[in-house]
Length: 236
Image 1 (cartoon, rainbow, N blue to C red):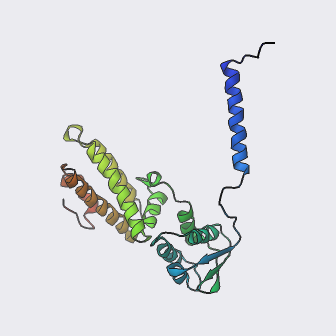
Image 2 (image 1 turned 180 degrees about the vertical axis):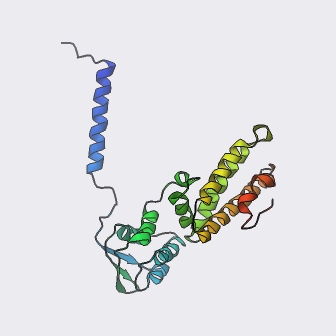
Image 3 (image 1 turned 90 degrees about the vertical axis):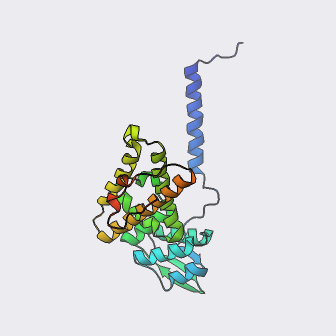
């Protein structure tokens, strides 16, 4: 008896069924090393000190984040933020005592969620409203957060500048720079808008440094000065 022969369509259908089965098995299986939420956590060191007798405001949550990421977030600190981001009360062992944290709400809960599930910075770049505000918030998380945000901004701008020339009317640079400037313009809180412009200023200064290192001409003043007038225009 001859073996059955399968056409491309049949083979494709079999393959897709195998993929679907594998995906279902993966989803059904518990993630390796992922602990279930139990409403309990442990903090030590600077993070425990920042926690104090509890947190409820966005400023207090931010303070614990800065303490945690300053020297590299530990598994215990990561577990703590996953617990509080879930929206329930968390009994946290810190400095020899148990501190009841949460349930968090509003902006405090939003910041915890932003840390636990941070969006790709590319999805925030040049996007007005909540996305640009999230980028500003992440820049507040100590030196690590600020360097990550301004470094990303500088890389985006430098890549655009490298593709630009007077022959193209600096099209790529203008698209990136005007895009992020417009996103900053959407911020209604003057203090936060200033924060965002200072981040952009730092990014432009990093672009200058990259240009100098690569012996590339820097962007001329008229291509970056207007959005930075209120915070001080940098020079190469």
